[in-house]
Image (cartoon, rainbow, N blue to C red; front, top):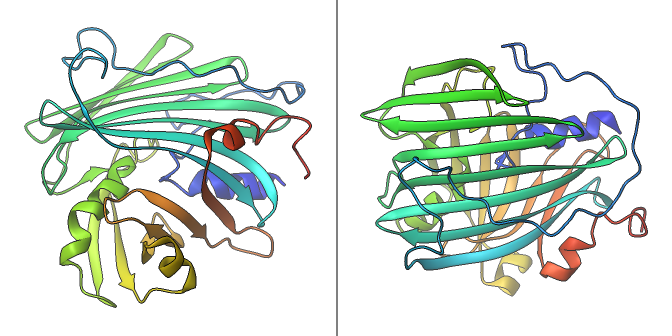
Length: 287
């Protein structure tokens, strides 16, 4: 099962916010005794910290693009995690918030991400904040972009780690904003024609935030796309192949990610909030 979990970590919206639990900078997390699976508590709304220049969505009027819940399965039937996406337009910026719960080694671990970008076709990054809770360890990543320079502060268990600073190509956007990017570009896309893009994985300290190239292809609609009135898109990114079903806005309906062996495919499905919240409860696992 461990190989399947590693596969899920590589399936970044991982775009599902790849979990870097052992960074080259020394953020090694030691193994601990297994803990029983328990249901996570009700999530708190994530928001940038004070002084970031961006306030919580409740403080100013925002236009919501979508608010969706998803379940994640490995091998078509094994519950691995669930997550919640909320996307808004606020003060001329795209605001993306995500909370992701995963069943790893008998514990439910959580990741939180909030990311802002300019509301343009290129989705120029403004800032992101990523937090990972893995058992008793926490990792905080705070990134800001100004004049093409990305600066990322790193903390493990509140201890400062050497930060990263690098220049970023003009059209590179944050990987979490890929669905939003699709929503802005699908109308111009020609079927069966590859469209290239470049994205920054928000938690990739090991790569020093070097943008990763990818491509997507709008394909002919199959039965599921017709039924859900979505666009069927083949996506290649970060050494991962998959089929994405997205609405014209970019909102995800379903993702089918290909694994590297039998039983390692990953299925992401839009779900009702109540169903998603129960997905990793002890009495639901194995069903």
